[in-house]
Length: 107
Image (tube, rainbow, N blue to C red):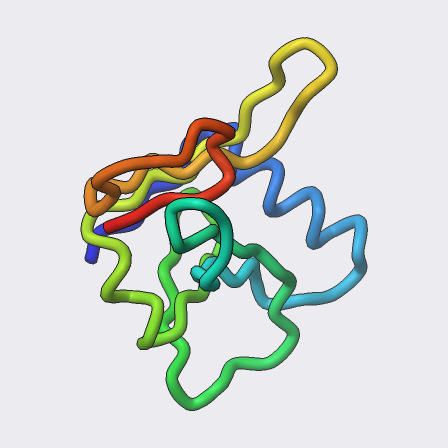
């Protein structure tokens, strides 16, 4: 599994953790939902679990639990601002398709 953060994504993760005042990093995982079956989730991590894998890039930590690793082969996380919308984007080589609204995907 290879994880890459763009400079913008790494800066955003670090600034969110700094503003929050604590945390080890950001957890990235998947949950079952949506038209295509899976959706990405992100949350702050204050304590590592037994099955957590820590990936570091550009000074930011991303934690992925072992069960979610199977949904990622080569993952790049970016942060984009487009007009009034902004947020993290996932470029995942394991994705086979996304639903029309872009909220869920399939592998």
